[in-house]
Length: 489
Image (cartoon, rainbow, N blue to C red; front, side):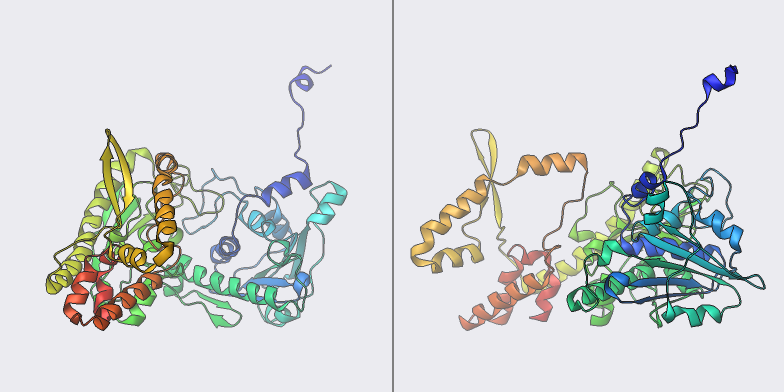
């Protein structure tokens, strides 16, 4: 027997099992669609159209561009998993990574997808992946089929060159939904609105430079996280690392008191929350990978809401920055941490000065003298305990107005104090598994505003002057975290 045959044997992956694995990589629908748009930009597209036809389980979604297009052989190669080696040299304008994006992004959302494309005079070519067919034949076999897409075929036929990706059997989003299911349709439309906002953030720099993306014939508007066109934004000088390959630039946004209501809403971004958008913004070839994250280097705190830092990378440092398949994760290499930390600390210091200065001005104007924390730290027998402050105005009012239920409420407060999950919080903080949420981050600050307004009105009813009422409220936790809201009372 040939000695070589004893040392090597083929171990081809099972097609259906591998594709099912692709489906579990963890794309959200917005990151999946953004991955398809990456291919359009890499193909030289100047316009991208995203459209869909709601039909319940028969819903079809189209992502079309006017890029250079592909012939049949090129489509087959593009449909091949791992079509490009991630270690291979890429064009400086290429937004790809593993040669898997088109496939993993599409399979994460649907069981069938098609590429149809046209080059200048080569006619139309198309091929599809059909997971049900793959499961049946147990082979990496493309199918020559394309779904009905009357809503997009006219536009495609009008292109001299371009490509369309069609998703159907979109089971992750519309599974079990009937065509006349109004609730499911409304949910689908709401998701598409969220996708539109996400694309405006991820491709902001491309959109500002002339790329046009349409979502159902409506232009996707870019969202600039650094609010560079707004008066009062402070820009830190750019810092270069790795011989200029890595660029850092810091931005300190204007305090809310210096923004018009529309500008303040703009600053909330796609996540609808200023706190959620503080932190680093990591760009690779000007395409946003990470939006508003401290990369495990700092905790998210409300005092740094005005701090946003841009990091620009080329596509030649993917391995060192641990860019993942979804292009949604980046981790700086250890050798750059000290410089990134130092730069970020400077920007954060400037941001907190702006934030605190405005708070100091307001509190000084109101002559705040007394502070009422919601929690108090107590030490007993050498151990620390945390108690709800019974003299806190809100707690005091509640206990004073509950009548016969006072004893029961006091018992509930004591139980809450005894069961504060400090060990679990400490464990999670040390693991750095997920950032700790900020006060009212999950519910929105409207709750704070309403409580603040109610307390203010009650004080006025008790014949307390407006200035004294505001001064007292400014010293009550959590209202002390939002001194700017006092100006609206």
